[in-house]
Length: 115
Image (cartoon, rainbow, N blue to C red):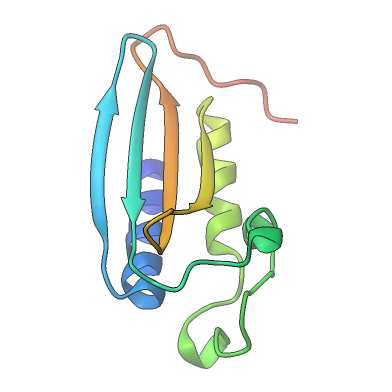
């Protein structure tokens, strides 16, 4: 359920703020990587880590009336970290953003203790 919530949030963001969503999955023996790319304007490099902080919004138009309170990415990263994974957000060289999920693979993957 947590992964479903994370993916729904990231796909919704890509479509709402980036006009489209392209998704892909890669796996190796240790990890599964999922990426969601959009074609939006991207985010100023100095704000990339801040967008994952609670209640941070990049622009004024992302308000409650337009559907954002600044918690979605924070919650998504928290849910992934509880499963031993992580979420990163980066500008793509061709434009837009990439949200990348990395999760441990296999039954031996264990979530770290919650701190």
